[in-house]
Length: 227
Length: 411
Image 1: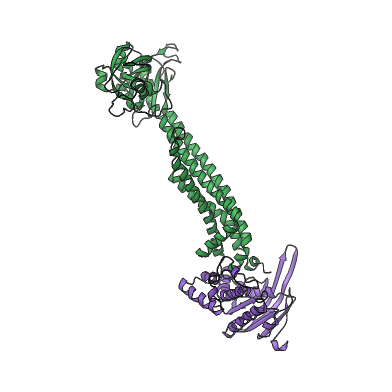
Image 2: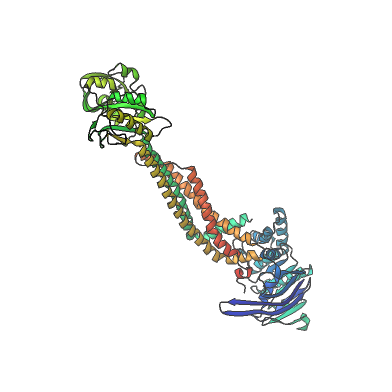
């Protein structure tokens, strides 16, 4: 469960101050499937980064499963990123020199999972995203859709409750995009909380709720039927 | 933590930054190689130097007749003090600080003849102890002058190895008769070849040694050319010199503090000097070594900074996947250890190779035999460890203190 209260994020670059989020109040229930939409610069990614503990808010409170994340130290935040949240990026962000198998292995290594269990889980996850036979391939030997599926398998490695995806289909063709959307849909059905930033109306049509951002504030929050 | 992935990443960096990584490793390689070589050569040189300076004798002091330079008990200065063999006996019997002592009578350029070979060499008359003090080691089947030779005034001679070659060539000399100024002598020994870098009466290898009693008989002389002494165990050469000045001063009526009355050459001073010199030289080398390695460290630190710039995104990815600060930190430090370690080991091996090959180059006479010093190996290892750590820690801390979002450049 994600509860944000009056979240403000300000970036200061030299003399320039930029307020990316201006008081976000947000409540996402466990098992919800939510899309965040809005024009670029509206603060979608910043909101997502804070939700995924990749960044810390300048002000405000962020409760994740009842725990005040704003008060956590860097190790506790790392722990959340490792176990509670799975992040999927637009640019995939795979380690270029590592195989698909090794990329999925990274979060498991950080979590200290033993070798046998790692192997078991990686094989299952790669199978789940339909890449069992590409385990030994490096990112350069895969298509965009395949890379994104590896990234999803990686995000799921430590079985997190929450999946955060920042424009996961933004760099993909429509067919691959469709596959990815299907996977997220599956995950939601399995009981995961899924939060997706998207411009893709195809995704937005399949979620439970759409949150619209503008100028760092939530403009409105509604179900897709209302669009 | 991530052994395989870290090593893969490291190799990947090496590939991407081939030249820079190689140059950095070369810096460390050269640093450790230079330190090991410098110390090995310094040790070889020092040992060779000490060995050849001991060729003349081990901690000996040589005394010469002199002139008094101080007035003493109503006597004027400028008197000649010329010791005799009786004085040496007196010193031997009374001085407690003397370990060994021997008079030395000398005649330069005497005719020495064997069959048709004729040569000219110094002949000196000495006591049996002389051989021990001056490291005149008899070759196989040989002996030096002994006490019976001395008391019976035997006409026996111990010859230097070059003199032996001049007279006998490859023929054996022991037991043969030679003529010294037409007086027949039996050769009892030949000196084993040795290194000698200093002398006061010609090289030992060209000298003929006979008992002092025989010498006095033959040349009808009382006065010594000089005498040689070694301090007794538990005493320093300073003690011995002082006691000799005291005893001689009493007998010849000169001031015991008048060091001009008898000239001396204390070789222990030279050893002390050599020892100190090589000690100072080693400190100097440590300094050079450390500076070389620091230069290498700057190189490693520099490349790690470049690697950091290039890898910021990867660090971000790892942080996003749950890497803690300590993991990022240890990964960077591990990498610097790998760079310094590989460079260091290669440097050490290269130095070892050079040191192993040197003895085959016949340069021993000039540079001695370089030896790898285990302590230096240890020192280099510790230094390289420190270098690796220092070079790694700063970029690593910079990397670990990034927020994941900054590292990913997502905002």
